Image (cartoon, rainbow, N blue to C red; front, side, top):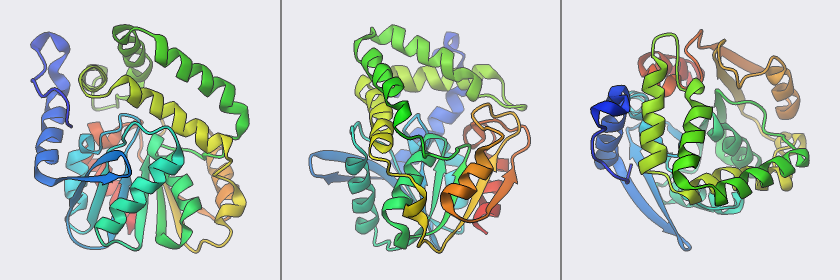
Amino acid sequence: MRGDRREPASGQAAAGADVLLRSWRFTDAYGRELTVGAVRWHYARLGRGPAVLWLTGGLRRAALGAVSLERLAAAHTVVAPDYPPVTSFAAMDAGLCAILAAEGIDGCDLVGQSYGGMLAQAFLAAHPERIRRLVLSSSGPADYGRRWLPVLALLIAVVRVLPRPLLTRLLVRALSGLLSSERSPRAEGAAILRRTLGHDLTRADVVSHFAVAADVARRLLVRPDRFAGWQGDVAVLRAENDRTQGARDIPRLQRLLGRPVRVISMGSAGHAAVLLEPDRYTQWLEQALG
């Protein structure tokens, strides 16, 4: 992370402090920067072995998954970008391609966690020749279509005008349930959300979250014909208690991608196992990549 690094006060549910402190150390140890056009990208590279491009979730900072990424790097070269506040998938795609080129990576396995799963499907659709395997973690099919555009436009408009403190409170309230698991209390996830949303991410980051999704939907970037010639395989990590995962997601993914999907259960580890249960999460991810 590149924002305010003051440690959380005791009154801020400091249970998430360990995750945040590890993320800062991770960035200091592995962080790199690259300018693509007028956009400054921050990313991490670590490890040696077959390359894995890690596309993080909606909190936009790859270092929040520091423990899992460091363990994955024992057998893989891991490239993990943060997301800059761009407003189109073309800008996102240009940055990802430039990072891979800067690191000398022609082909890789692609992992998308939550929001990163949508980006991963769009990136695979644009560059099937570069991707050996797709792993979706707590993420469903991204063939949203244009019916979602009015909702996304409304969200962008609301984000642009709400007072920042109110916006942060609403986002923490809406997302806290996703950042908990059977082994980690809700307070830990809420602390991570408050710190990240309140001190690291900007309003432009939140606008970018919805604007890029809207661009993917508007341009119909994720559709079956884009995957017809791809030769790779697909694995999905999903938890039974993840409310973002629907019963029809796997059949939809199989129709979208045109191939069987291997499902790896994360039990009741929840939507954010990479943050809250990194030991078990790394085992599931290595299974998916094996």
